[in-house]
Amino acid sequence: MESCKREGCVREAKVKGFCQSHYSVEHRRQKAAANPPPLPVTRVCTQCGETFQPKRERVNSDTSQRRRFCSPECKRKGRVQTVQAKENMMRRYYRERYNMTLEDVNAMKAGGCAICGVTESLGRWRGKSQSNIHIDHDHASGLVRGPLCHGCNVSIGHFNDDPELLRRAAAYLEGSLVVASRS
Image (cartoon, rainbow, N blue to C red; front, top):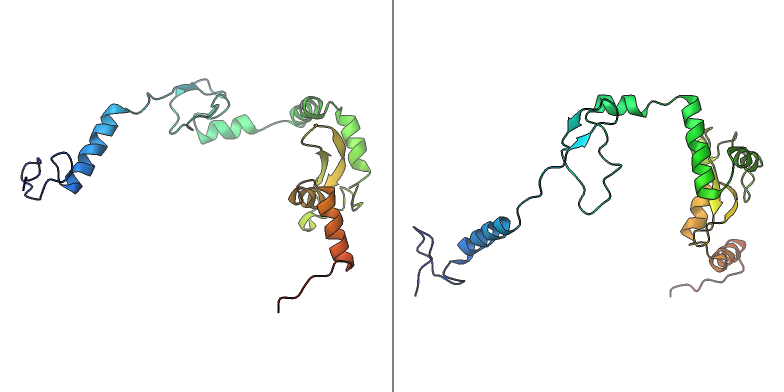
């Protein structure tokens, strides 16, 4: 019986001259030496211009837009926007995403939800009066389908945009679908 290579250990050597517990420790040490941690990334704060090192970075992700601020104070200052800046941001978003102007979107939303008819001012979602009318689009083609309130938009999403599933759900609710009892 050969004993463990580790000095002072009297247990039986089982794996590559080490006892089981010392082999695990040695294996982790060798693995860490072979794969050193990446060098820290430095960024420039978009608010104050200071160079900083983020506390953590996401692995295998596009980090060009992440960790833009050096501190919570800079983040708060950087996120404060004027009404005009928010409007410009929304104009760009709707133009790039749906090829629509902000005026077209507002006119579409003014008609209310295409399914339930709720208007933006009613705020059906959890009883809040908030902007809850969204622009629904086909995820495959990207074409705009119409305005939907949050509840209807989420419901359609849960049915995976499948009209047949929605027909079956409507038939179920209307009582024409017979459900077999478990006896």
